[in-house]
Length: 566
Image (cartoon, rainbow, N blue to C red; front, side, top):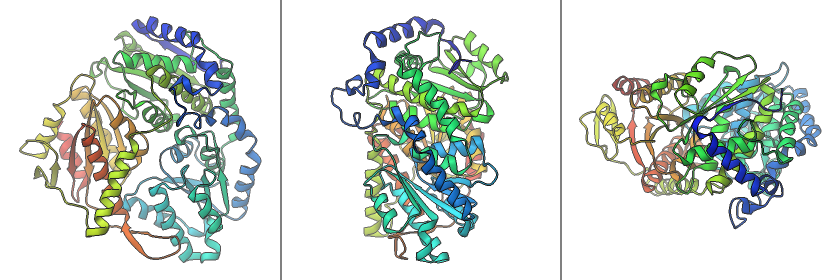
């Protein structure tokens, strides 16, 4: 089998993509990428020249395996059985993929990821672990992410209270950039270890660096094999491979997705074999945050169940990542091809081929950015929601509350907020969705506690939306999605219809102002609500259509009422 096996059916778009690949060859794009030539993307080097370290990270990490293994063996010898990663976005998504895909090898640490500021989620983790046997991984490139720091202060205080300040630091490790605030705090509070990553690697391109490989090693993954699969793809791509549209290369994927987006097929629907479905959340962030800017964007659709052919518009592309011998969806994809949809199939020998896929999709995303004329390494619109959230928090500190909004209407134990005229929440949802235009999509933003129940309810709702209105759909828990798809929502062509869900918090818990001290100015509930308000206002400021449903104290009941409306 070749390094990346599969098939490509571009139908009537084949000539268009072949022309794009020919242009890439003529412009020596692959060679220039490996020369780290920022002019591949923009005339100025800002946030490009210092964001290309990922090109060599698989080989660089091979030289760090001894350091990583020493940490893993030490914590195992000390009796640690669990690990909790505290992070957001690029710092948390790859480790989460590894947990879902590979599970935990016997004798290694059972790893979970906290990336929600919902107080219920935070408290659930606080109650779940035996502090004496838990390692906390504080993971942030910038070394100052507000959510990650809030988690760190909260759990450090719990560990300090249980074990004392002299022992607390041994239960923490840090993964961050050199010179960051977190690096300084790790030294000050005597963390067991601080892994200082290559600062020229952006968060969403960091799966094959310390950010992904340290957590992977802790669960017992064979990271040498994982990196080796990545290196094989890296070596092929660095050789300047510019195959035509019959072969699966970074050039084909990147140029293909970009050119299809240019002609309106800008919704890339990812479908996976069940054993590797977790990869979707990582690739979703990579594609969305990298390409959604300057009025352009490629929207990844992840987790949407495959439907009948007639529910899809002409804005779709389908990518199927399948494990070897998985034939379960062959008939479905044949029908999609026959209906004229572009379909790309990528075949993996086993889950360790995801190492190669990480690198392949990083290259493809860089190529797509080149073809779209954007910088795939920055995130210019992410800060807008953060600024507004900080403003909300400042008002809370001054007045003791976040400014209240007046609902447009109430009913069915919920309130509706937004520019909408309707007689009930159900009618408001339908009226809002009727604003859809060709190539619109629906994005569900859930600022509620992530649970198996809410996962299932949101999945049913998005499927109903897709089937009735023929809209591509996405779902994200807040504030997690702000570090993933949030850039695309504010930076693309403005086709999204944004449905935000909030609810009462039945419990709350304070965020310490400083590590090791009891004083607190805000709670996790306040932080989450400020982030929800800030993001909603940022979307409105960007000219997006937004509606909010406050589900009160009955989240499942409210979601059921709205779903039954569709």
